[in-house]
Image 1 (cartoon, rainbow, N blue to C red):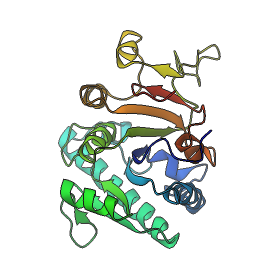
Image 2: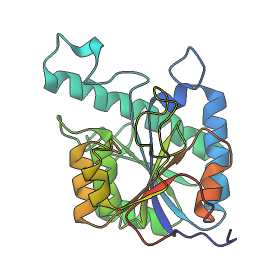
Image 3: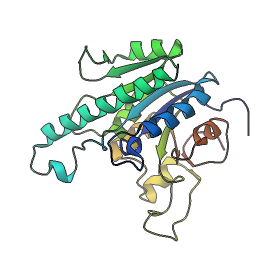
Length: 242
């Protein structure tokens, strides 16, 4: 395991549900504290960090709650939920003493700065953690797609998808105790095995732009740093790292 990071610029995708942890609340301060502690260890390695966070802990456009709504209205609500999470995470990052900016795809100047590729690249180069809110700014697209898009726009070395499982399995490991762990895959293998790494739009963007996807368990403290140092943690789709 190397002391030097194997990735210099990352796009970290987090689920909204991860912010809740085991709490009955939508956002757990204990989870935020642990997340920012993990981020600190990576920032200390001079890694440039972009983050896309979902909104499922508050509201998801494709959910039972939204069944009687129009898709556009429901997706707009889901995008606003990601803004709430991004503001909360941004505040926790700054309280940790890490420079940070929150850029949103939907203009709301009193809350966050509007996203532009130029602003994102500038902030990353200046050592700021950049949190991308409001998805792509359009309905019908998931935050997985937003993560792929932002990862490509900031020229990230990898899309790190932080989950609550150890990586990619042949079937859902939470339902099938015999699921096979798959540490290294090509994009074609994911397609042929019909593995649900991300939604199809996000996966197509990563494949077409050769953006590797590294799936790992973000809920284990210290895993993010270990991934950055090249430990055999999680599953990698594409890319050249073993």
